[in-house]
Image 1 (cartoon, rainbow, N blue to C red):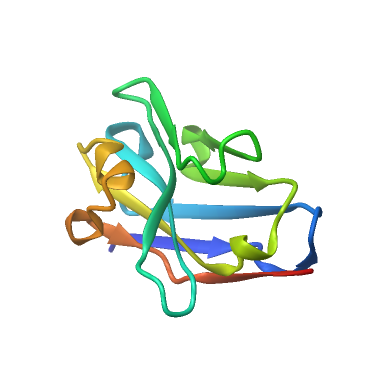
Image 2 (cartoon, one colour):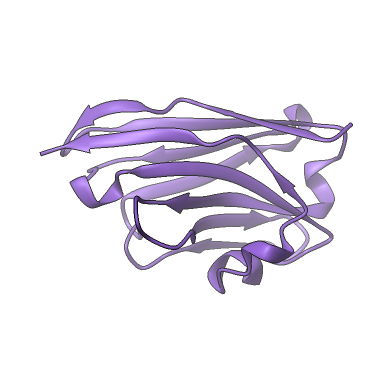
Length: 128
């Protein structure tokens, strides 16, 4: 059974930092594009960041470039999103996601209907 389990959300003040963790099981990160979507209240789900070992690429939405860093430890099937200099507009439910044998274009193009595996969301709330 494939599972993605996200953790690390919480309440943080603007300017603060949070690290999200996503642990996968039942498939290997080596062949997948893995990353994070987020959905704020009343807004569409958007791709935030992605990493692909097969493409040797990473993706960041313009709104988070320079503040968020994605990384993965494929030996542990674990992915991280380090979120620094957080802003109130970063408040959202964050979902880890994976596209098997896929591309980070699923994240950059917000093709969330094409995502193969989803983790349960973790809420990040940034207070001003």
